[in-house]
Length: 103
Image 1 (cartoon, rainbow, N blue to C red):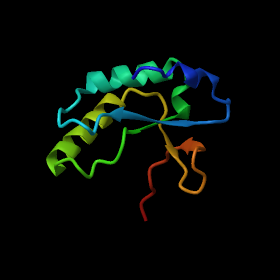
Image 2: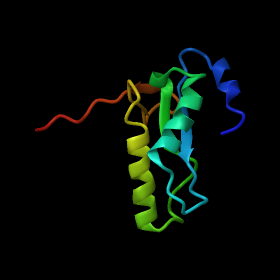
Image 3: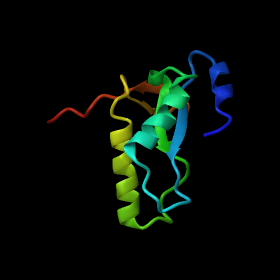
C-alpha cells in the first residue's frame, strides 16, 4: 500500500473506500496483514471516514478463496473503533453503520 500519504489532504467531510484485499492473488491475507494495511490508512484518515473493501471485484476468485479473504477482512478490521459504509445514494459520503433492526 504505497503512496497513500496523499489521503491526509482529503477534505474533513470526505470519506474514502480503501482496498485492503488483493484479488489478483489466491493467497489469503492474514487478519494481521489486513490490520496493518488499515493502520497505514488510519494514520492519515480518521477511522470513521474509512470504508474497507477489496482492491477490485472478486468474481475471478474461486468462491472458497473469496469467502476466506472476506473472513480475513472481517477479522482484520474488527479492532476499528467505528465502522462506516458508503451510502448507496451518495457515493463518497460515509455514514455510521447501524445493524438492521428485527421486525
